[in-house]
Image 1 (cartoon, one colour):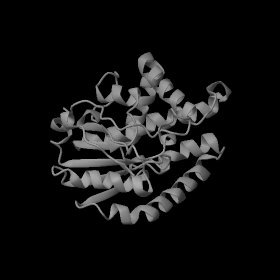
Image 2: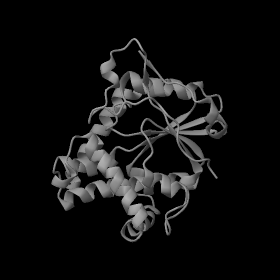
Image 3: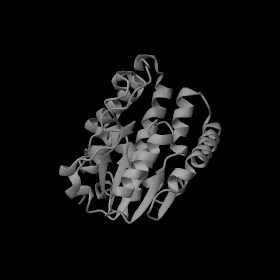
Image 4: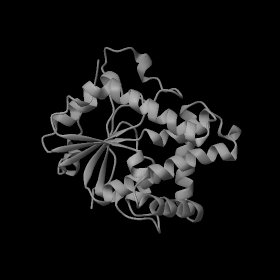
Amino acid sequence: MFRYVHATKKEKFWNRHDNVVIGVSLQNPNLTGDRFEKVIEWVNRQANFKRCYVDFADTLNRHNYMLFDGLDEDAAHRKAIENGGAWLEANASTLGKLNIPYQIMRWDRWLRHPRFPFVLHCMEQAYDTYEPFQKAVHDAIHVFFERRGLDQRCVQSKEYRHAVDFILEEISVDTIIYESMKAAYIYPSKETDAYKMVRERKVPGVPHGLENSYYVFLIAEQSEAETPKFKQRTAQNINERYLFVGQRAA
C-alpha cells in the first residue's frame, strides 16, 4: 500500500484557496491508476477546495514525441491527442470521484488563446537574453534526460531545442491560466527552478500571473511493509517521499 501524507505546517498557504488545479502529464507514472486515485482522495479531503481544474497537458507532449520518436510536428500532435484521449478514457471513473465540480482543460485550448503567442515570445526572449533563466531551463533539461538514462552530450541541438520548447511552452500556458485565477496547484513532481523563477518574478520582461498559484508537490509514500526496491532511485524511478514546495501566492 501507499499513501499521501500531510504537511500541516504548510496548510496556512494552500488551505486559503477555493480553487485547486491538478496538473496532468502523460509521462508521469503517479498520474494513472491507483496513484491518481490517491491524488483525488487527497483533494477530496481538503475542505477549502470548492472547484477543481484539470490542467491536462496532452499536446504539450508533442515536443517529447518529436524529440524521442523523431516525428514531425503534425504527427506528434496527432499522437498526443490520441494518447490524451486514451488517458481520459482510462481515468474517467477516477475523475468522477471528485466531490467538487471539475473542468478538464485540454492543452490545445491554450495554444489557441489570443495571448499565447505574446507570452511565449516573452519567455523565448528571456531564455535568449537572461542567463540565469537560461541556466535554470538547462538544469531542468539535464534532470529530464538523466531520469531517462540519456547522455545529454549525445543529443543534437535540434533535438535539444524540443526540450527547451517544452519548458517554455509549459510556463507560458500556466502563466496565462493564473493571470485570471488564484489556486493551489497540485502536481506529483518537484517544481523546476525555471518555473519557480517566473513565479517569484525573478525573470525580467515576462508577464506576471504565475505567482497566483501555490505549488504543492504531492507524491505517494510507500508503507514500510512494501519492498525496499520501491525506494531505490534509478533513472526511471521518480517516486520520492512527498514534499511541499512553493511560494505564497500574491
